[in-house]
Image 1 (cartoon, one colour):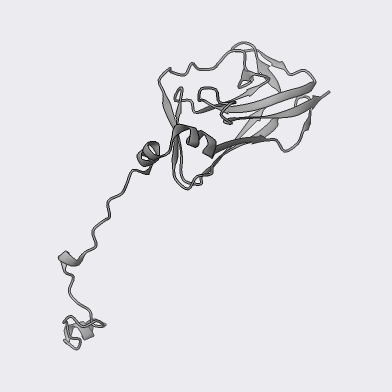
Image 2 (cartoon, helix red, strand yellow):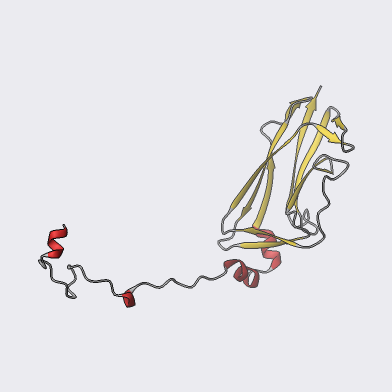
Length: 178
């Protein structure tokens, strides 16, 4: 191939099928990008953003033996064809709880700062998180108590004001047997 180019066998004019020298003026310039997150904040009202996000929680079974870990899956989806950004109360974007106790604990492991945060969903994005509850409630830093046999509610909520009323919370019930 090198001989062809060196022998001037091909003409180097502006013909459509002959190779030409690279002209720096003919390079394609990068298109400017638009910050879609900021654009959606300006164009999509907050109440529409809340309605666009759905939250679900599921477990593989509804009944578990005492002492068995209970896996659960949290799915959050954006139904809009544009990105959506939700303002959260803190940098902790979402939490889960068992029977109203955050992360099945009487005491929180951390104290989230009071500064607001953001939870971003791309257009049509589905976020999936997997967690596990070991069937224990934390009552102190070093003490765990097994859950009583019976029904227990595992819930998840986004960290926005009044998440349940806005449809940004979900629950499922599992039964722990003896």
